[in-house]
Amino acid sequence: MRFLIRSVLHQGGLCGPDEECPDRVFRCRRCGYSAQAELDGCPACRADWKAIDVSHGPGCPKNRLEEAMDTPNGALVRRCFRILNGKSIGLTITLADITEEEFRVLELIEAERQDTRTGKC
Ligand SMILES: [Zn+2]
Ligand SMILES: [Zn+2]
Image 1 (cartoon, protein in one colour):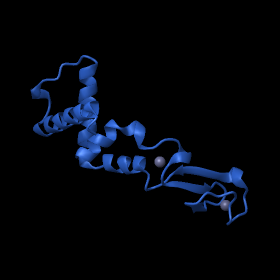
Image 2 (image 1 turned 90 degrees about the vertical axis):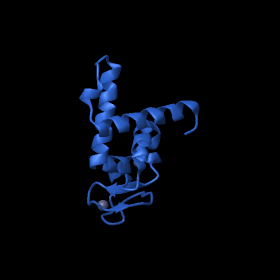
Image 3 (image 1 turned 90 degrees about the horizontal axis):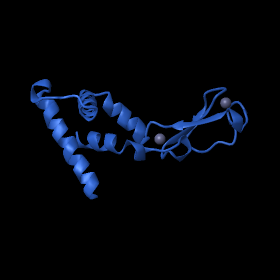
Image 4 (image 1 turned 60 degrees about the vertical axis):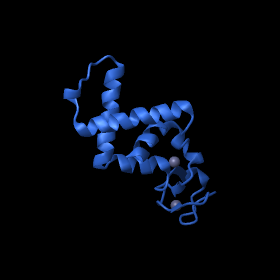
């Protein structure tokens, strides 16, 4: 759970452009051939480098986060961030509006934010 929250808070730093992805994948647009290593052209159909797309691979921290957000825990974390957003635009949220579970996650988020601010992270 903490990992999820931390990842969402630091989402911007997770992965940059496609080219800098730690697990980038090169794929040929013409035949679908893909490789981890940089391709100057497609070895399968001999298309040139212009046909090669680079994208975030399955091991990319961003993809991993997206996968994690699809789990029930991820949905819970997402809901809690939405609650916080609501608060920041002036909505009043009382304890009656959130579940015990959501409250716990909100506390975790708050603690995590504090850690970030004090540089403990
Ligand atoms: Zn990536
Ligand atoms: Zn190809």
